[in-house]
Image 1 (cartoon, rainbow, N blue to C red):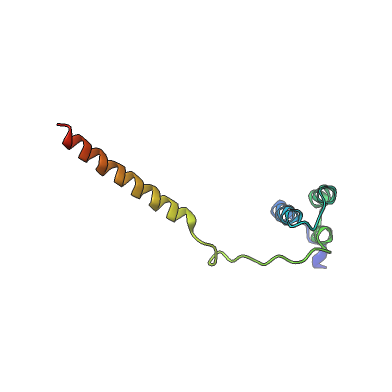
Image 2: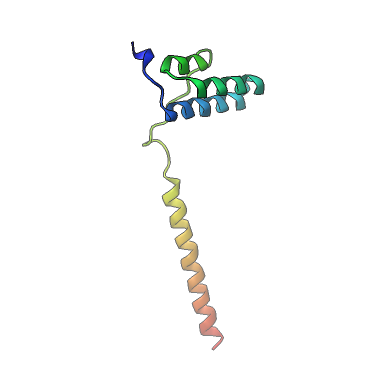
Length: 97
């Protein structure tokens, strides 16, 4: 019964992303990728969507806690660079007076 649940756009996009990773890994040819992407976007139910990837290995699930928070680190690096540039500018201005 749960196989007849309608698939969402997000679920279709997730399957297409997985197909792209499998193609990059060499499990699918470009023709197979194209056919399966068309099938994924045409899928109406979760069963139809699951049929697109039935013969591919399951991918490990990434947990949000395990993913590094690179956005915050990048912002801190940017602020550090801006701070150093400001200090150098102030030193330069003081020396040229």
